[in-house]
Amino acid sequence: MTSMLDAVVVGAGPNGLTAAVELARRGFSVGVFEARDTVGGGARTEELTLPGFRHDPCSAVHPLGIGSPVFKTMPLARYGLEWLHPELPMAHPFDDGTAAVLSRSVAETAASFGPRDAGAYRRLVEPFLGKWDTLARDFMSLPLSALPRDPVTLARFGLAGLPPSTWLSLRFRDERAKALFAGLVAHVIAPLSGFATGAVGLIFALAAHAGGWPLARGGSQSISDALASYLRDLGGTVHTGYEIKRLDDLPPARAYVFDTSPTALARIAGLGRAYDGYRYGASVFKIDYALDGPVPWSAEAPRRAGTVQIGPTVRDIGLALRQATSGQAPDTPFLITAQPSVVDASRAPEGKHVFWAYGHVPNGWEGDFTEAIERQIERFAPGFRDRVLARATEGPPELAARNANYVGGDIATGAATGLQLLLRSKISLSPYTTSHPAVFLCSSATPPGPGVHGMSGHNAAKAVWRRLREVRD
Image (spheres, helix red, strand yellow):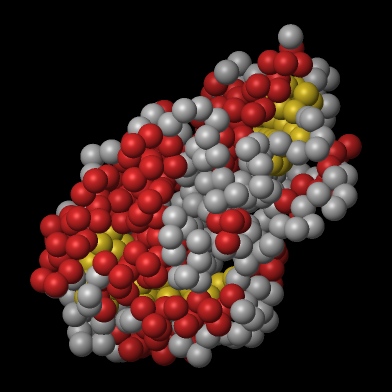
């Protein structure tokens, strides 16, 4: 490492790797430095419970991965990434033994809501059908660094999505549609009444209709490994087990790009109190299970779904989110669960299954939520506990220890509430730049925020290569 690199990337999560790939594709010399022994960040796969059971410690299902504008420009399939689609992207069971579904088919989704809301749902999504590629690129590139490709559709999406999701749910009359949509919003751990939460639910629904909610064959690690392999073929280097405490720990470079929390960036780069106003949000308590058979759901649809939301009413979901975000562990948690082995037999020994579930808890919470979570699962899958061979639990302290970006266990690397849902990590037309002209931020603390989609890395890379061209000139 005698010659100066064009760019050094700190952190080998999907955004850091994407930023590195984007720079390497444009002929810049790039090195990635990762504190952990493997690449991946929030997209990893490990044997957490028993031999042969391969779990995703964090992200498992990837609607924004298969729909990512930047991933679509990369030959990731050549490097082993294969998307597997469960029969249903998502199911939402109710106490009466039935379930609403989010299907790739708009008609099947609408029908599951019942006759009073089927038409309302079709009218909600119809203006955006067949327009995912341009809508996703425009929406996930905000704040816009170029003119939108489809300004009419983007404006229409904004009119529907910028109000709170509670406004949008007024389109529906019955509980089934309201609850499923509230569950979609809860994926970003934001109170349902928050600014632009309607956009969150709508983007997840449209992603299902456009590309599904797939899983990566072999686990989420496959996404990270594919990105890292592509980067190496482009001439980039990846160094693992390399913890960075200050800029002097890194080789000389023209630009430093951080796939870290804003807090860590400020500490390492000596930016003082630059991000003191940045807020971290609620956390989750997560359990990975090794099971002796499939989850015994009472309703039929969840047995075919990759993701199952557990929270039967919009009131239940709203209350759980309000409690978690205001510092109280919910009495009855809303759960997001994933069952990868429904579609990928390689994840567990023959006849066995892997399953994960998490419920929202306050930032930094140190309690044990296992009983509350399993009581909720049993409510919709009686006999579930009898199928548990082993479990691995992680609360906020363990999540933060596993991934330094998860401050206080916040898996979104920043509260997705208020203006911070859209304007992360600062109110700026250039949220990827910092007060140091050679230092940039590319983590999910920047737009478009959480998810394995690489778009924060892609957007940051644009700012970096503009800087590098200036330096070269």
